[in-house]
Amino acid sequence: MRLVTRRRHVDRRAEAGFTLVEMLVVIAIIGLIMGLVGPRVLSSLGESKVKTAKLQIESFSSSLDLFYLDTGRYPTSSEGLTALAQRPDNASVWNGPYLKTGAVPPDPWGHAYVYRAPAERGPYEIVSLGSDGQEGGAGTAADLSSDTTVASRQ
Image 1: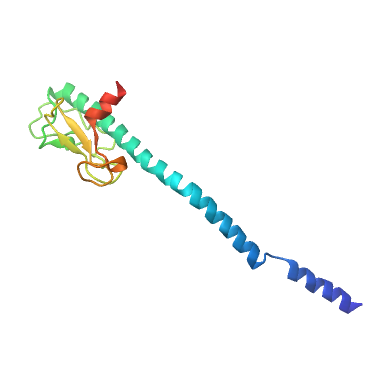
Image 2: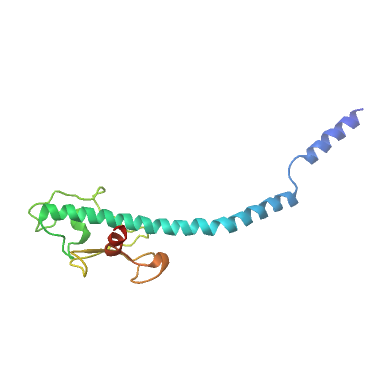
């Protein structure tokens, strides 16, 4: 009788767990799902960086308007966006910093924003050079400008 109970116990242990084939099937299914979903998630990540850059440019524009109200002028190209975080030497009235962080953040791709004053279409222009960090480009590498950001809101 003892031999019969031991065999049943041994058989139950052998049945516990997954076989190699079952594990390979599960891994293959997970791989297929990631192959279908992964590119969509990554493309939305790129789009969210573009939206973040547009929002930062709009925030800089608001801060520049506050700077203008206080000083009567916009920062020069040489002062740049740093004038929003640190008092320029020639500013008699300055109620900054005009940025919440107290520093000029880089664009979502880690590049510095380009500030031009005066610009072709207004008193200033703020540009993010996109994911490639160079002028021109398409998709997420396209340049984002305060001229186009403000125009798209209107």
